[in-house]
Amino acid sequence: MSATSKDFVNGIDCYVVAKGSVSGDTTKIYFIWEAGKGSETGSYVWSGWNNSKSCPIKVKIDGSQLNLSWTKNKTDKTSTGVMKVTKATSSTFTVSKPFFTLSFYDGKQTYEDTFSMYDIENAPTMVSADEITIDGSASSIAEFSNYLGTKSVDGSLKVTWSLGNHSYSKTVKNVYSTSYVIPVSWLDAISDSSQAYGGGKVTVQISYGTKVYTTISTTFNCIVSDTFLPTISSVTLADKTNTPVPASWNKVFVQNQSGIRVSAITCAASQGATVKRIKLRLDTQYTEQTYSASSLPQINRIINSGSLECEVTITDSRGRTCSKTATLNVLPYDIPKFTLIESDRCNKTGEMDNDGTYFLSQSAVEYSSCTGLNSITITAEYKKTDTSEWLNKKTIKPGSNVLGGELDTEFSYDVRYVLKDAFSTVTYIDYVSTAIYLMHFLHGGRGVAFGQKATMDNTLDCAFKALFREDVTIVKQDGTQVSMREVLEKLGF
Image (cartoon, rainbow, N blue to C red; front, side):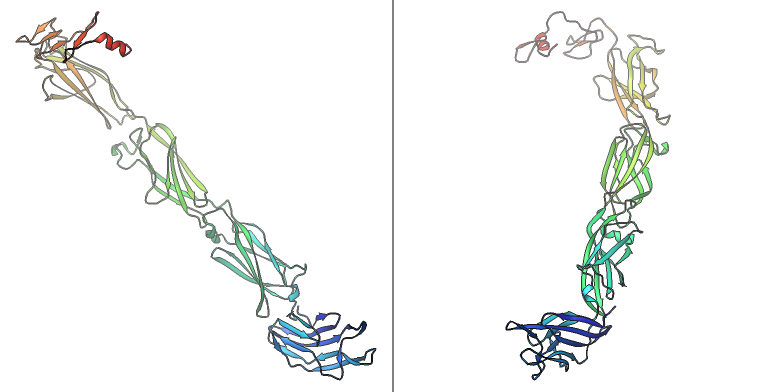
């Protein structure tokens, strides 16, 4: 509420009271000046002006002097008999401002200050605002005060809350605090952190009439509510791209053959944050990368089997996470292998015969059935040992198979077995000897064999197990001799 009377000077030499009113930006006032008891030559006298002289009082508004007339209200005679004016009233004047700089000169001293008929002396000089957790319902409270402990009652306060590029203003009057519920949409200003120390700001513009008297401000801490987390709506998992698992197997996962990838994901960060990282974990394996909807994570080879936990985790720009888990059934798989391979000469019915032109193939295998989805094939083919072309390729089953029919007893043969399943190929080379002879000399006398016919020039070919009770000496090309026993001893045998 504005005043109708306000002291401007209350001193030893004079008193000045302003009388009038203020409305909006218009101030109408006049002054009542009254002399105080001053000191001259040790005795107290009235500090008015000599009645026989003109009024010395000068008044300036914002540096511009006013032309005021003064009415003498009272005169007094001093102890020395001098008549002095001790009280006077000015003419009324109008200032088109709600507050201004008032300068008053009483003939001896100048008094100057900001003056208003409004209650500017009690205007707020401080504003405070507490830390707030922004959740869409919490209010930020701004409280106003001044150094005197008093509070303004007639100033207009424009209070503005701001955070980042967001702001909101409201104008209040005759209150000592006000509040505002900061919307969650403002949280995009804190997109990379869960809190902003001093990130919020409250600014208070204090006005009288339409003129701003002063502006005060403060900052406050903003915390993002821990309820605002990233979300994953859906995740689609698939085998790695270009998987060797046949399409007819209906998208099963196979150990050591399949991979696992996130083929699609619907996810989002909350309230201004962004999705920054994505992690794919399968059992003990994992991969993590920067989030991109066009390039999602993939584990190239699944190393374990069984019911494995698969987890997809996203991390937002505030470091907050969200995960979705699923169980992935992975079929066990290992490379197939032969557990038995034997190839021996036989007759047409499969009976062992050293001079037979057939050979009996006996085989056994181990392989991963993948719940009946996987199958194997075995092929066998053969050639003379000293030739390179494989002949008579035939598909066989594990167990006993009679092959050949045209094997020459004078020659030995190599047999190649090839085992295949849906993913792997295993090759094994076996051997069918010539017909068995205790000792046989190659035609021409340049080769000898024990246990079979001699088939190679300049070669001692032994088809029996060999036992050497004494040392074996080898002569090198330079004529030096090497003891095999010494060589084996050096090797630790």
